[in-house]
Amino acid sequence: MPDQSALLDQSRAVFDMRLGLFKMTATVRCGLKNTLLPEKEYAMPRIYFFWPDQPQDATRHVSEGALMEAVLALESLEGHVRASSRALALALLIFLFAPLAQAFAARLGGAYYVDDAEIGKPGSCEIESWSSFAANGDRIAVFSPACVVNPGRPVEVGTNLVDLRSNGQEDVLATLTAKTVPIPIGRNGFGLAIAGAIVYDPLNQTGSGLIINIPLSFEFSKQLRVNINFGAQYYSGGEPNGLFATAGAGVSWNFVPHWSVISEVFALMGPGQTNPRFQTGLRYSPTKDIDCDLIYGRNLLGEGANWVTVGLTVRIGDN
Image (cartoon, rainbow, N blue to C red):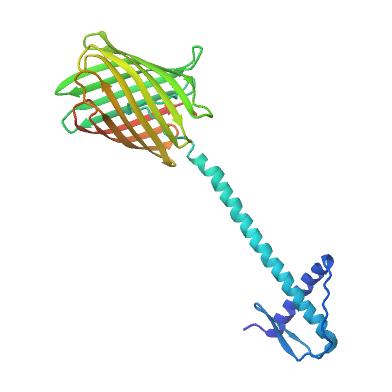
């Protein structure tokens, strides 16, 4: 237990200092009856003052006690204001900067059928690869490098090397692809791209198909984007053979930093086709330059089977 007289001296010293500062900015008047006050204990939180029994000091001491209450009340209010200000500042920082940690929403691409209205910067490249496996034994393996060039406007030029097994038959395809973005995604959140591909059959060494696709993107935030595609494809080298209309819709949601959910539904519309076709997957992006995909799919080739896809995308020079 600390010595009570020492505690009193410390308390009076602090009090006298605060009282002097307070008297510089305010004048306090207090009228009390000129009567004798018995010795009393004037209690304040954690501090005790013992007033003497002299009438001439009573007014001064009580006035100083009231003044001390005012000083402490002001300091308490100031502490609350400071704490509230710090809390408000922290909330504003979280509100303003938390979205920046999530600023790279998932691009589609990779193993997804529905594309978005976006390409990399001129001079950048990316390598996409994925493998899909169906419950009925069908499989798809794709290796797809591409780079963005600028012959007057940015154009992404690439190739798809496809190894496909369906209904027990093996097929190998190669495509030359190109994509440009006449309307980049801007402040209004809308973008439009034009993409096309020429299909080549390496086994027969002939051109065997043509694909055209129009991706539309609607970006509601840096974390949420909806994409709509429509187009057509012609293929003469195998099944499905003929001219078909294509359409699809997809959504990508970057729900926490580095993680995205991507879902899509699409259709290949023509004779003998079974629709709709569906994929949904989880994407992990440790950096803006790397995407790792794990995807569940249904009816990807119109065969009614369940599919599992694993994919990896690596970008170079797109920072």
